[in-house]
Image 1: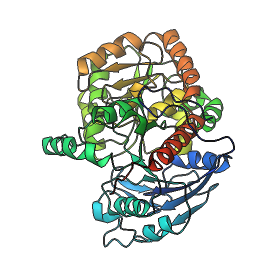
Image 2: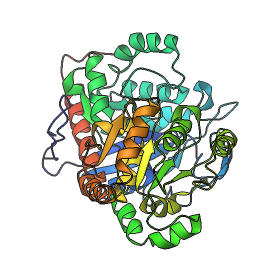
Image 3: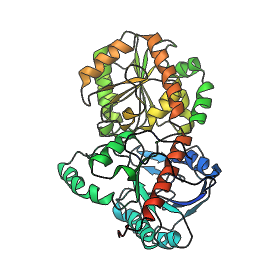
Length: 423
């Protein structure tokens, strides 16, 4: 049997027979740098036979990223090591952020043309292709899995009408899935609060390629990296690593850093976006020109050097369904401070051991944390080691086990004689 996933309220231990091999279609909006390594692991797992159907190749092809404000092409392979196909997108204005931006009618035939044991849809319900894929699975009586990375109902723009709409829609929406898949125990709790039965919720942890991050971090020469930043080797250094967008709240870490005023400390921003000019202006107004560094956009292969050369990552977001930078930093033995809106806090942050959690927008509390923690070099070192050690349990293998549990539960649910539900 597959390994039991221990988050309370999920599907628990898989009922798959010994030697069972599932044929699964994974419908994805576009290639994602975090998911590609997991797909390669799935393709190598003897319990799975996967086929990935992409609605777009955005991410694998160089394109303008509006959030970063520049053209981005990831410098790691996103399409190697697993079987995939591109389903033609017939949208008039293609894009992954709009309902009519992904319109892939070919999904209907793709889902129905082969004998899959299950279909897992990762496009998000706010695009037309999600509904094409789900409808095709229902019409073929193939178990369908989908979910959300959310751990709360609030939206990125915090609009009240969206909150009220979700309260009505989501309990109905997620009952359409035979099993709901979520990447954190916070997501499990959210689904249970919406009335989704425990037996139809599965935790499939949001992971990165742990081995790759650990191996790359082990190569880093911290002295060389810091010298390139013009930061002394042993200076207490804080990192913000994310897009410079309002909801990531990069101003909060800048202002908290200024208020903490830890002797000899530095702040590094890794990332780009629309707030960069405002942040640079505020740095000058605060008189911090000599203690703040802007690295700009850092591609994937450059990030292990960044995490391994700082003492603390701070993620102050007011909206963060998970926050994979937390995985990355901790694998590089970097402890973290996150806001109470960051989904990774549920499973990855052990307060005082691998990191800290502070109330969103509370700059005074964040400044106090920095003031207390940054001078404690030995404590930070031990926390970083504990963070790296703890990440061993939050791995791709555990995510695959979670998916297998979900598939087994979905097949069992779909085969029930009293299951007469329709879309």
